Figure: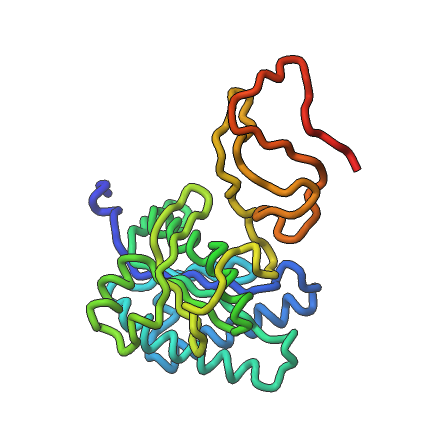
Length: 269
């Protein structure tokens, strides 16, 4: 088999359930069974044959590589609509804390079959990073919804923006995803909710895992790496701590200061 024979592009979807890791063994079993039921029923309702998909179960979700003839527009339209209906049906008679709350990422990209039967490639990396992104986790947490969807740039630009789906492109919100080594624009939709009105700062959400906010203090680093000229109230709060007491006193300097052999502005409380 040549390298060109091994190269392929496929529609793909990654699914993940919120709260799986913090659940006990019995609840994890319920989550897995419920998710498989919803996924299978959604495929039937949208006339997709899951037996033709490559599915890699991840415990709290799955990575699915679909046949190349399945258009992304069908996933974005029929499948997501059916998934939302089945998810609503599943959650209807359950207490709020027993709901399945799901993140879905859809992408079209490279998927190369490995010798072990699994798939690899930049497309697989991309859809995995999208579903695990802080911004999508935050959208699900802040909305209180049971479903949040993220589309990769190719899917949104080629399928949604060009009018090949019945959805409204304005219902999606453009975001920048930064997850590990992955960097890309993507578009988020939370069905039934105004995504544009949400605060998608990860620090605002109460989710299973969120990354620490970036350093937004500004200022210019000196030779030792410390920042000078970045105002912050001593003993108060700053953008990074978001209401948590800052555990020391910080002195701000507007020019370089020679502190060789000295320590300035540290106070233990």
